[in-house]
Image (cartoon, rainbow over all chains, first blue to last red; front, side, top):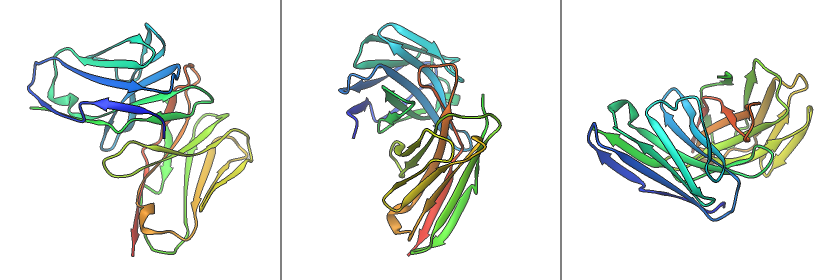
Length: 111
Length: 112
């Protein structure tokens, strides 16, 4: 299995508070991704990174920002959490041929 | 974004039966991938296909890259209880960075 960890694994927060989720990899893969997974929508790409300090928006990027200051870490920040951001968040990594490997997920609840 | 249509959306089968599911897209793909997600976990890559007509096996799983390059199929032979989960197909987003589009999944339930 690819070495990917996500923290925290579960979080409950209140509307309007900032939240940061962390993805850490030990594989030295170039590409990193943040997805959200909601019933009826499958996996939707939020942001991705193609190198240190190189990031771009995905399909559902509004309300989210990311940063990648080191190859191994990719942070997802919700500047002011809303109830619509309650979801399961997955990080993934990739190095070749579109093969992406996923972390265990973070379940976020915004009350 | 790109629409990947998976069918069926859900399946209930008896243990030991064979399973077949498919995925279609409105665009031609040069790569198809199949993932499985167990409850409470992240998706796991099962099979990757890179050539039209290619047939690839991984144990009891067999996936095929359709000749039209707009579809792919996944078959599971002699299903067992641990096959339960959601199966996703995925194809490349041509904008780069190895981005993928994912189907909405086929939920498989195996009845012992």
